Length: 387
Image 1 (cartoon, rainbow, N blue to C red):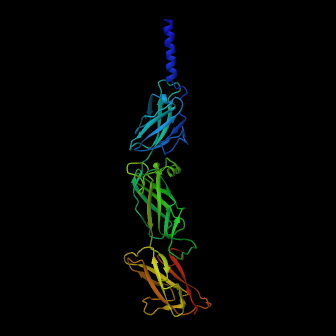
Image 2: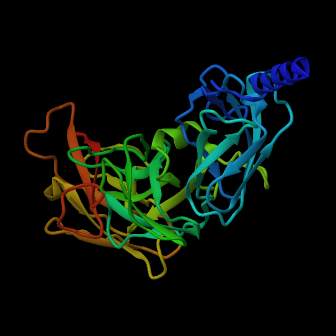
Image 3: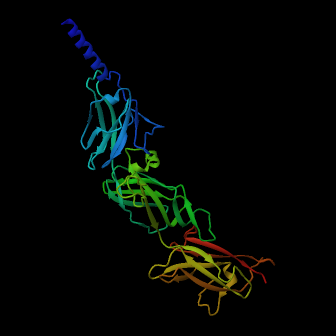
């Protein structure tokens, strides 16, 4: 009888040794391939892994005896957990399914054992919003602009953070003392964006374009749940809100998160050119082509213009161009047209103009005719010959 009791006691001890992870502790967490917590850069057991609403993922937890866990438990609602195939010694794969309506925030997952001398092992996941942008109306600005507010409409857009991609493009935009001589497209890499307001169905973002004011511009924005850092979204676009111009396949989560919009202000002069040449001799006619950024609106676009030095020019007979050397001259580019030509006669060589000639200038103004700053003001030079 004594031998039976001793044998039974030894058997129980052996069962306890193999069933009880007395020192079981999760040391590392590995995410799905291509995401966070890679095999080369695993995360610690304190990292709360982000999971989008409506998504199911498999995480691998690593630690002594974790493969001996017998059941799983998760806190809160909207998330279910189960053992996944592929569990090996000291590694356990766990399937985590998040419903599309799960409340964002932390969930605690517990690994239970047959015998728990130190309690269950625990780690956390973070449910993040699966926001989606469905429309971004272009911004119609009443004046040339540097800052614009753009509304991104969609679903689950609340708690949004934002960043602007370094592909921001501005068409005909210069500021300060710059005076462009030819049409140009500037690429801005230092535009900034901040969230002005955020709700479930709309996030309004203020975008600042450095180098304005602008006649028109374009920028690409990316929204994300502020439970995450901006860097996480930048480096792993899968966690960003879906964007309008995503390159993803429907039904997958490899979205880029990008939404591009255009900001359009008043029309502006994009170039001043000389179809018959950039030099003019005394008594000859100079033809000037004034081209707009885009076709004129219905009813036409008014452009003020003047020659410098104005006293060297007079009206060109038969040209149809009205010219006065004082004040500002005015033309209207007809609706639907993008340019208009004017002609003047070079009548008098300016004082001090040498044998090699001198520089003349055409000035145009739009919108605010008294502002001497692009894109209100546009300048172009040509050569005045002295003989």
